[in-house]
Amino acid sequence: MQERVEVKAARIPDRDRLLETLKSEGLDARPVDEVGIEVACGGDADEVSDRVLAHVESVVLDLGAPFVPVKHEGVVYLRPPTN
Picture (cartoon, rainbow, N blue to C red):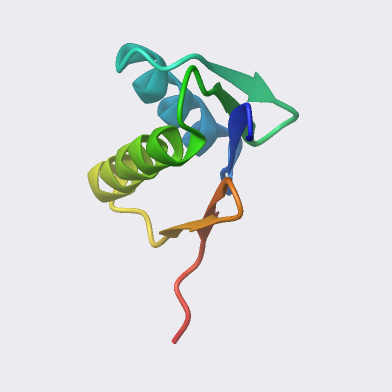
């Protein structure tokens, strides 16, 4: 069982805003490297990663950023849209 969910943002400001959002929602999130975030899973990693993905989607919509959040093998990535 995975003990954390990783998030990789495209830019430092995006990471910082998402980190603030995750913490305000009561998730145990901390910055990692320049654009990463780790979120501790107090229980079911799939449930926590789904919550994280929902928050990432919300932040992307608020920013109006041209990114698509994708969850893959316990990591949430923000990637540019493909045409």
